[in-house]
Length: 128
Image (cartoon, rainbow, N blue to C red):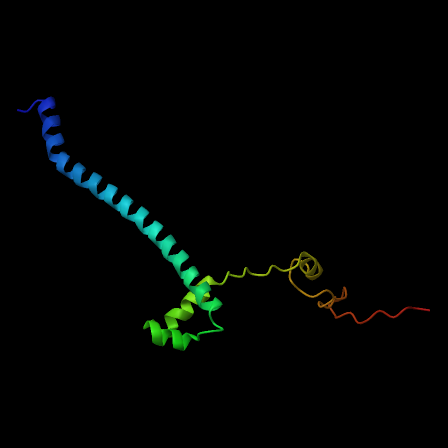
């Protein structure tokens, strides 16, 4: 029968290969993910530079003409010009308008008040 030390040694030997592969895989995935992030950032910067260059030269060369000379499809050139434009944020509703509408979002005075008998109240007429 194996002693506890012998059992531990056997398990460590059996797990050594698996642990080594796990470590290697985790390290390589980490390195490649970091590299991919850096390259993606660099490509985005290049796309912006290309777009700005194309936009700045629109007065001397059109997209179809540029596509003809460079063998780059017009669609791709267009994507670069779009990538170089800053993205617009969504407009927020003004606080004043939201306050006027109330929490339910209804227009002021749009609901019709009811009388105590359940009927609809009409406009009030000043009594004499």
